Length: 418
Image (cartoon, rainbow, N blue to C red):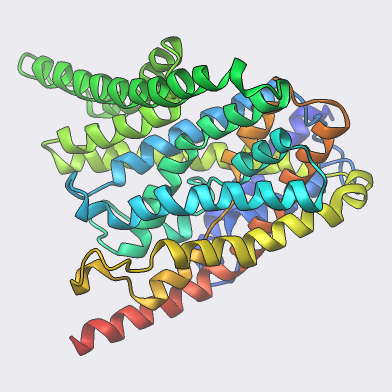
């Protein structure tokens, strides 16, 4: 039998099994990503050898890029709070404090303990700092009306830090290419930081609102087929991302903002829900392929070669940097004495634990490999990233279900006492 046909058969059976068995899987300390990872390993060279792919390929960059932009749009659609600073308090703290803490802590450890030069160290920090909006479905907003602070914070963080890590990725790449800051720092500040972020926000607002306005005007003459309306979301994703990249803005940020604009523009909640369900289904389908590929890419020799350094970074990131950084970021600094400004200790702990690494890090890795990251240094960063992602998938996949059950019991007890 042709390997391609056999691979299709295996993937089809996998989708059927996880769909039929979803009720049992949700009760177990397992995530879908962990199942896909194990199956990917079995389909790789150490198993059936049905998937053969090198880690340095444009295909990997493009598939992870598409998965991320669909997921970011889905995150934007879930954002159900007014655009006020107080309503986004957890997001602001996790982005403004926790993400820089993570980047510079990873960079410092990589420089002093792994002997990476500062450019490569900052690049590795930027690659690993973003949390994943694709693999963390167990701890993200369950539906549009979900008001839970933990789920909102993790969902919005996953949407924004996947976009806002890009300036630091560029910073690391520039530093890797040229140690002389004077030749590129000004360009980084005005182009890679200020312009690209501003362009991403502006384009997300313009396209998101613009497409929805056109749709509403056309519906005055003839309604859009319900079955075709889901494709409006996909069209907004592609148009927003492409136009933003054309003007050198951050397409990831633009897509998230576009999702937020679409969420606020919908007058019919049923159609908004339908659009969200469509993007989530597309996201989950692409997740299967991406994690299968990751599992098939794993090799024993480089894991043995770089495993010690990778586990050092992964262990410190998961068990020290993220928890301590989240605790610091969510500390009440005295700016407000209102009880609303404070986070429940359980929320602060779980903010620190659920820093899932995944597809976003794989995208930034493949992007850097296509630029100036190459040779032995490229291989080291690639395997540190891959092993860290796999470690996160395993640890967070096992712990998500029991910890979220524990959290829900605490919140229910708190609400019953108030």
